[in-house]
Image 1 (cartoon, rainbow, N blue to C red):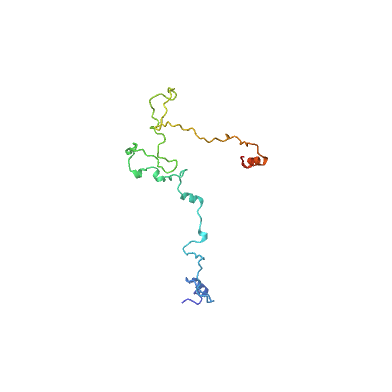
Image 2: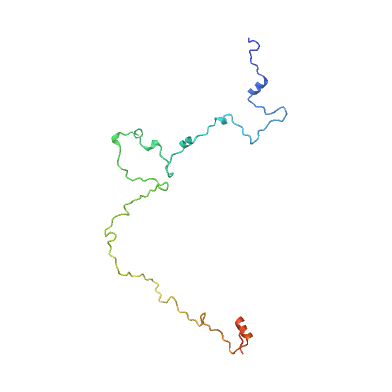
Amino acid sequence: TPTPGSYTVRDFLQEAQLNPVKPTYSFRGEGRRRTPIYEQTAGISLPSASAYVPPTFIDLARKKLATYSFKSLPRRSPSTLCFKDKEINTAPGQYDISSPPVSIFASKQFMFRSVVQRSSNNYFIPKEGPGPGHYEVRNESSRTVCSCFQSKVPRMLPVRSDTPGPGTYEPTRQFPKQPRTIARLGREHSIFFSN
């Protein structure tokens, strides 16, 4: 039998800490305490804030795919850059080195990756005849192009009007001699009196 004092006796505070159920009430009788909405409860399985290590710039750069300068297709993975003998399983003398039946051009993805051939021989086929500067210049006047609507009506017809144009009027003369007041009315108000 163990002697008295050999057992570890816990007090009520140690027992409360070992209890997995947290008390939601107090001695004031406030009832169960509700967690507010804005209070974030940390999960037990989540690491603490000090355990989080943000990734460095080098780590982020390694995760991204390396691309060309004009952001075209990404670079191929090193496994697909060349065919390995382990994948082909052919002997050194069994390779087919003949050219493919159809020429393969680069895919059209961005501004400088066009499928169209730049220098085609179809546009620069040499033709028979003299070169530049060896032509004979003809001095004959070429035939003018005639319109099917050959109208014989003159474009600017003469204007036949009996109305005289501006500046052809003669100043009005008052005959016989009129008094000054009546002549002044004629000059100022264009009122002319006849006897």
